[in-house]
Image 1 (cartoon, rainbow, N blue to C red):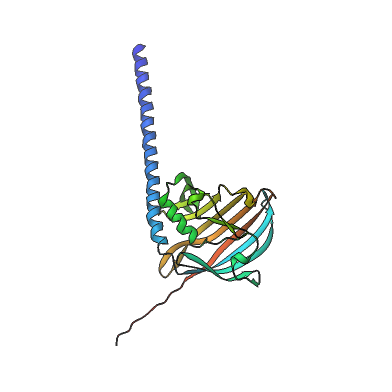
Image 2: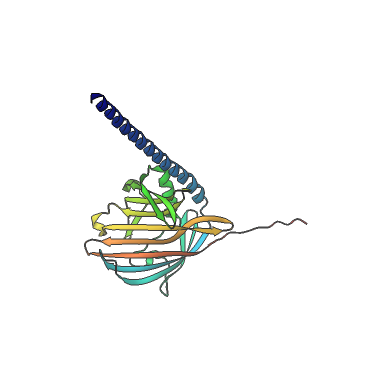
Length: 261
């Protein structure tokens, strides 16, 4: 009986050790997979967005207002603009609020946003390099397997400015990034404010953009497809949100042909 007890104890101990080793191996493989995705993401997105220029697209923004906590609301208006990206800055032209021509987004009352086209992508690509993203898990996005990461950015290092009554406030935020598991490309970006000064009157700002593949001149890019910008006001229990759609992508530039006779 004593011998059998020793045998059973040995078998049990060996099994426990085997499971422990298997678990450690799986954890190591998972950690390596995550590191590989981040490595691919840093290299791939640097390659893509270092050459992000000379793009033009049409942007439509449907603006809504409703009660805080309710999905329903009323449509306020629709904004249309032609957006170009050159020298690391978005340029907005042909801006219309419904049928009324506006000189700039800043001259329009209510919630509006700029920078979804290239600035957000460039800043996110730089954050992936400068920060250590925290892995959250895997998810399916637009029929693609994505690895989800988060990063925290404080007010001192934030390049996200909130304009209220002609005053600018640097907004600390949490950014969530969906990266293609296969190639590391950015598939979706979401920013959520973490602290806004009380005197501003805004409790939270949330901003997200989903990207899509766009083929231009024999090359495929991942560029903004849809987006959402939400501003919440806790004191008055209401929120304003914009639904964005990007379409009709093209590139501009000059082509020169030299002929020898």
